Length: 379
Image (cartoon, rainbow, N blue to C red; front, side, top):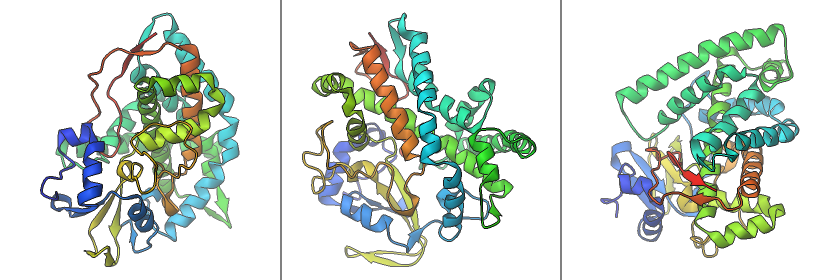
């Protein structure tokens, strides 16, 4: 099994779940030599090792809190969470609803659209850009940077990807340098001003930390939600009974979104570095090796979830790992959930007879982020 496993294999990237089932059964911990990386597929193993302090990140000063360990991570997360509060997210509910309906108004009379380009992509980028205080005319730039940043997070080692990533980071830094300077002089009622002002015992975010935090919020607050909406709606279109159930009971949307996250989550892989040697399940994980947590596999583990390959929107015992686990649990999870709930309910209500126009769908060539390139639908 270890010889056949290759996360770069196109068939694996397009349809990973049958491979996950095989790996979980025959090689739940598998070593992939090209990246010096162990892959985990079982729920219990992922949960255990995501909480193990001997696994972490090789963070550098000024890098995103996503790649930091305590105490640097604790400090950064504490400061950012003071600005990115559940209350601030809840305050955006009406705005998210308004943006959702505006996007649907734009296409309602056409009778068809590309679900990804015309809806799933535009909603979260508009929301996070508005929350940060980015003027609407600059949202297109945001989209481009986000695409480049996401490609840079995949398991690839290509020069053109590395160059595009660097270009996005520099463009982002120059742009936000100007915005941050403006907010220091004249704070506004937006997330960027709150980040600039976030303070705890005299400690604040440095300039490089502000850049990387905004960058993280853009990617984490955008790309994941695109895929939550895209993958979620596709799952509903392929499970008519479940879709009708939700259309008849829109009040069940919160439970439904949790199941859509479990069933076909937007992030398939998160990784950690072994900081000190770990012996686990008879395997020795050496210092410096990487550990890849296959969240999509863990979320379909029959030892944790009853009939895991079935979509069941009424599933209540659903402690999925779609947002990770442990100290790096996704800070933006409440925002992603809210956007997913609003977007999917509005779409089903406004286009009750929504239909998938093709069964030949292409996924982005990115193993970390699982999402559709396009998804033509009509009503």
